[in-house]
Length: 93
Image (tube, helix red, strand yellow):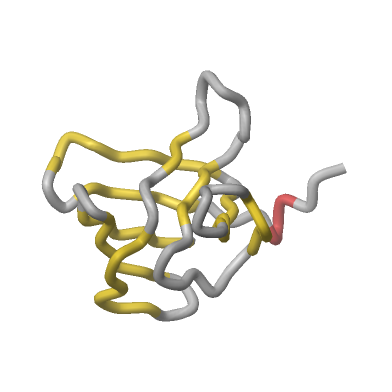
């Protein structure tokens, strides 16, 4: 059974596209090697080179960013970051 008291909502917005908004209850930060192969999955602490995958982790509803190229601001509940072609803000509630 899901513990609703500890369920967190993640909202991703695209700074360059005000119409874009993605919401998910789960997310993973994916670490890849130079060939693009997944080497590790993280629940928190994103770093340069990681990609964001937002749940529910099914092909029809998953959102995946390109690798992070710059982290502008990061707290426990917020990250503002850039990829090679977009700039995002992710807030956790």
